[in-house]
Image (cartoon, rainbow, N blue to C red; front, top):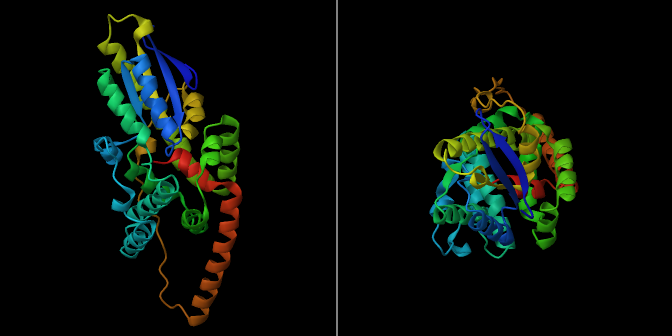
Length: 313
C-alpha cells in the first residue's frame, strides 16, 4: 500500500500474517484520514495503535472533538507542573510539561487534537470488526524510567527544551511535511541523539522494542483466531508515530524480550545538603540562567520540538 511499510510475520507452523505500518504525525489531519482509509480499504484482522490503557481516553472522544477553549492553557499546565514538582511528584510534573507542549501544538494547528489518528483508526477497526490492541508501554513506566536515566544536567536540558519549545517554536505545514518524509525525520532523530541520548533511548528506542513485541503478539492472536482464513486475508495494520517505524523494522527479525523494559527502577540515592550560603545560591542561579540560555540555543538547532511531535503522544 502506498505510504506504508510492510513486514511479514511467520508463526511456528509457517502460517504468515502481512503487516502494514503507517507512520503518522500526531498533529496531522491528513495522517488521521490516512489511518482511517487504510483500515477501511484493507479490512485487517487486527489493528494496533500506539497507545496504552493510561492514554486510551482519546478513544472515548465523541465525533466532535473538545473545543480548544475548553482545554487547559499552556500556562495552566505549566503551573500544574510546578505544583507537582514542589510536591515531589516528578512523573506527574513531566506529564504536565508534555501536555503543555501539546496544548501549544493544538493552538498552532487550529485546535486539532494530538493523536486523532488513533481515534479514527479505532473507530474504523470497529467498523470492519478487527481485533484491536493498544500496543505501547504504559506511559507511567516510560516517565519513571526517563526520570531515572536523566542526570542533573540532562534533566535541565530536557525541561528547558520543553518549556522553551512551547514558548518559541511554531508548528506549521512545513514541519509536518518534514516529519512525514523519511530523510528529514532521520536527520532530526540524529540531532536528538546528540542532544539527549538518554531521552532518545527511553522515549524512542525502548518503545520501538515494545511496539515490535506487541505487533508480533497481535499477529499470533490473529493466526489463532483465523485458522481457516486464507493467508492473504490475514492482515494487521499498525498505526504509530513516524519516528517509530525504522526502529520497529530494525527489531522485527530479532528475538525480543520486554521484561527489562517494563522494570520500574528505584529512585537514585541523593545526598541532601542543608547548609546553602547566599553565595552558593547566587552561583546556582547564575549557572541555571546561563545553562538555560545555552539549552535554548541547542534545542532550536536540533529540532527537539519536532521529534517530540513525531514520537510522543
